[in-house]
Amino acid sequence: MYAIIETGGKQYMVREGDVLVVEKLNYPEGEVISFDKILAVSKEDGNVEFGKPYLENVKVNAKIIEHGKGPKIRVFKYKPKKNYRRRQGHRQPYTKVQIEKIVQ
Image (cartoon, rainbow, N blue to C red; front, side):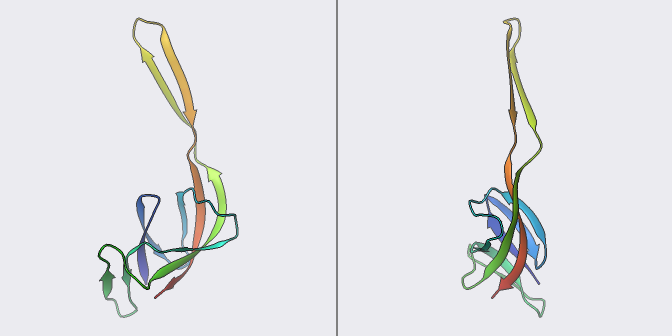
């Protein structure tokens, strides 16, 4: 059984026990959260139910494992012949979650 959820502007196909890296969520580590934006869910008999756009009465419970930052990306911009050079770095924050249960 799997579900397709939407969080942080992205869609993820999840099963119970999966570990996902999603955009940063503002919850403390160890807390159990619930994803409400469910696009599709498969049932035990193999049928798939789709929402318009989201399914009602279906939730995915997940536990927050950790927060962190991704790898550093260096941004460099310059203008030729003008001695203009700027270097910036960016590390995207993320949250690692473990899917516990798909509740129908």
